[in-house]
Length: 475
Image 1 (spheres, rainbow, N blue to C red):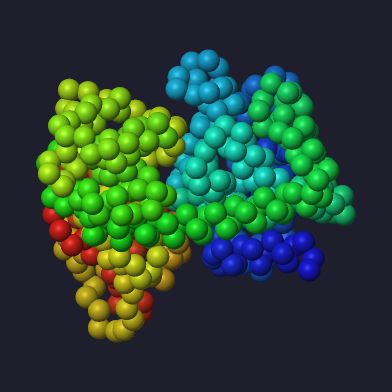
Image 2: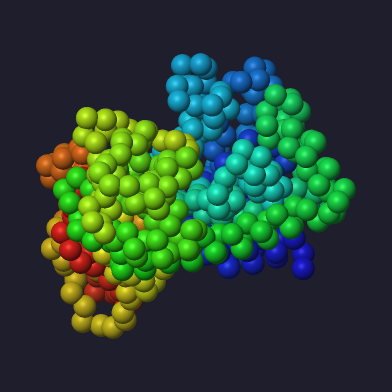
């Protein structure tokens, strides 16, 4: 199958794009991003895309960075694609909490891409990550030490709207494609510097692995796909297990049955602990391996009394119950693994528990006419037009910068932070409110308001129904 058809099949199978979408393409000028732009340019007539290129110049390589920007502008003129160049210098003042200038630059770049996508109404942001990037990421996480979360690698769709159409295409395939089309590109000199871990893996580790397995990149990308599917399945088992062993929900914590917990396989016990700590601590409580193992040891040995953990949690044994409580004197945001806030894939239909408040969420679909057109803005139920968004849903917590179009405001957008303030939602509770999110944006602020863009109209034929079944128990 020709490369362009392989990529198109991957885009279609993963539901990355829909006909008529407006797509922001991140183009650095390197071979991967140039190939991405060229591929999407080939497909845009068939798919009726509208493409807009964004190039972010961080100035990290001086004149070379400026030449990259000039190259991208020339390329876009040749392809007759709109191009925006953003100059966003990065220096040490942006590195607070970041591992490097590169990490700070990446953060600023994604923020810029998101901002421009919102400004122009783009549904998707496409980046040029390849199968080689996937393999490098998996090896890097293996070297650092990780559970299955790290082995999930780079997601094909990163909520809410970032897509990776080249994630199953190797760099060598893209280089051949560029050569066949006679397309030039820029080379980033920093990619040759051995100071960066990823570069060392690319230049030293992967060639060694390739000498033992010529198809190592394909092997690792297949492994990622398997791990992603199995990890999602295990998370469903965790939800089912909590339904059986979780007990009273307190204002400052939660409880579970000790005997029921100890009957679970070790793999599920670890995941249950992580889920409960998220429930008690909110989206900032992302436990590392040592924290989880300390809790497991405490539960398995059946100690009486309580024990303070380094992560600001108090564990108490009371007869056959284990209580996990917040130490209110030591509740400071922390992130032991530098992961994202809680996020969970949602299937249609499905039943799940939002672990940060203990609320049960049920998702279903229905079809028909004579549907209710307007709904009460604040409700434990949302009914949305399924044909107005891509059915690739996630449930996550609030992030700074989130915006949506609250139902009942005439289609005007609003920062979620301002919406919370207007509705007098305490700051301590905001990160625990479930957000149902599609690639196009926030569909529903659980229990508060759905998005105007996805409302039911007289033309609606397919409806997604989301129900929150109980009052939240905020910690």
